Image 1 (cartoon, rainbow, N blue to C red):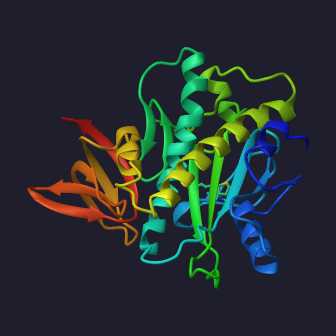
Image 2 (cartoon, protein in one colour):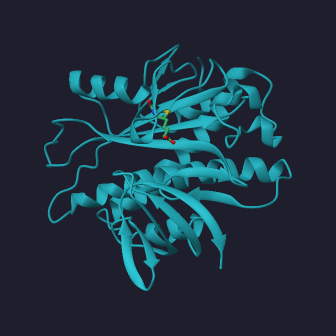
Length: 275
Ligand code: BTN
């Protein structure tokens, strides 16, 4: 696959005609040879895609992209690597910035942004999801672990090709893309990589500080889960309902539950009403 636009956005782009899971394949590659920061592994035919919380991420061939990016910030000194928890949120923001101009050009109006932590929704329908995984035993020479950020983006699916009714694709939103399939993929991929790189460079330049980089504010501005009531389904299946009021310095969603602040670090969010 020729990807002329995308090739400008990453040191190495590995195109796979098919892949089990791009995350799994990039992790395996990172363990078998030295890969540069921001190496990309991508396919339009992922046959064993992984979703969050152990779910599957499925799509027929040639209608979507599965994109995994290796991030290995080489930083020295006092860096707090717990801030790597921001990377999944940055990926959601980057995908949202990719989708936004395309659907705006298609005349779509309404609510577009990220449902915490990183699902991109267009008027309540999911067009993209992100799964981030640590590369096991990956401490670099500066003591930084490597992370694989994987994003799936629905591009050409019909409603019948989507796993659930609450999912959508760019095509279903009326987005027009170039004629040739390779050019369609190149346009979406290059835009996502450019957006992700921009955010990542800022984050690294600020020593992975989400406030100093301005990224906490940028993520909050784009997060459609804030300033409304939400139900959080936690990994242990426990559910809490509260008013989503903030994203804290470590990326957790802060809920006001009957007057008490409760931090949600992981889980599925269901949007309830605005107040
Ligand atoms: C979710 O919303 O549940 C997350 C979906 C993440 C899917 C992407 S596709 C590229 C990368 N490879 C995978 O196996 N999963 C992620």
